Image 1: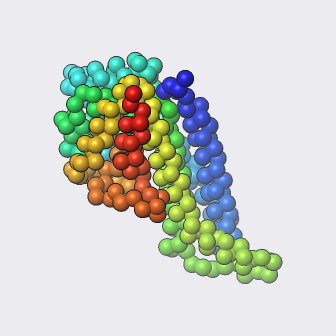
Image 2: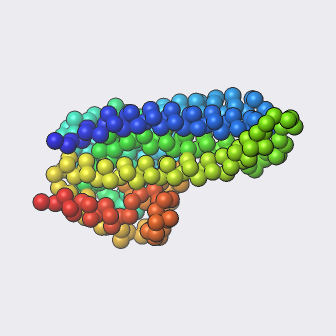
Length: 297
């Protein structure tokens, strides 16, 4: 029978696959760029930057995300109802109690972050606390705890960081590198140079598409896991309906953290053509609501 942990091991394996795949991609990209500019140091630099940024993100990603969002820590005494709901859900899910934060915004939203359940944090907007009833808030918080239990927070961190590394390396050489190709007679040098240029152009696009595709799949999984946790899919479905109608801006939202939130924090960007969907950090709210309504008995 499916439960909160049914996809945990799979996500951990996928995390290592993503880390290895992106690392090899960075090495390949660094090799082509170093060949193009006849500068072996570029390859070593790309590998070092990738490793350092990945380690930094693993240990400090939660602090970065919380600081960027403007979230403020709250104690049990300051937010007793919020603590009570999260504590009960955590016990039910068999998870440690996460640190709780409140984001000073009227938008209905929330996110979870941290490298593992023992170091997790859940941040909720003031709008979610004031505009949602208890069942809806439970649905939202169960969704975020599902991200914690399913290890989605680790997957998201790894994808964001490694995609960012690839985009950064490519952008540096596209903007500031001169096209000073190696002057030798090696067979295929021109082909290698062309491949390097194409890789520099396509790398940010590929990294972004993979990052966003992984994020969307995680949202459907967290919706289903959250519904199993509360045994009341209508709660989260109702919350998503309110979110769809909510046009309050989220001032501290950035493109780097948008995928962490329960729903797209950027309002007015919900057109759903097939090409547009490739670049969305979340599935259309209507699709998520329909899936949850289908779970109702």
